[in-house]
Length: 122
Image 1 (cartoon, rainbow, N blue to C red):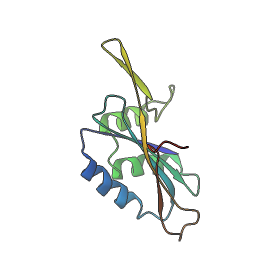
Image 2 (image 1 turned 90 degrees about the horizontal axis):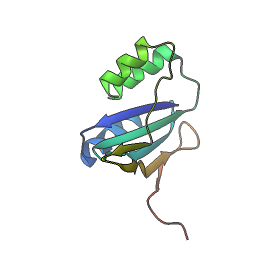
Image 3 (image 1 turned 90 degrees about the vertical axis):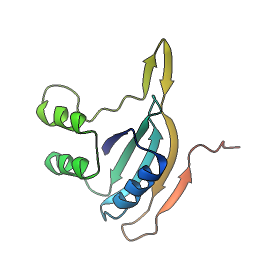
Image 4 (image 1 turned 45 degrees about the vertical axis):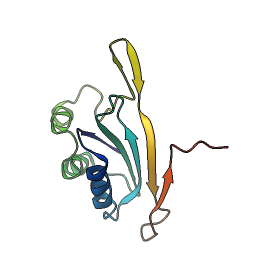
């Protein structure tokens, strides 16, 4: 699993990045969430195969992960790495991530499907 933090981007840029990532034959699913502060997106990518750490760092850079976060993760061996906070407290108010979309495919050569995670299930 690869987690990306995209700050200060709009919906159009997010969609362009998702479309680019969907071009990788190793990606099985892409979940997009609005970050707790609502100034960007958290993206969780699942792959068909386990990705070695060195390759994961390369992919995170190629896929526009927050550079400061990436550098800290590369230099740290003693603490948790690749962490995205699902909630944030701002002025005493707890803000949470908002699930938006799940892009997925069942096999490497399958067509991409999308599920709107904001729709209420009846």
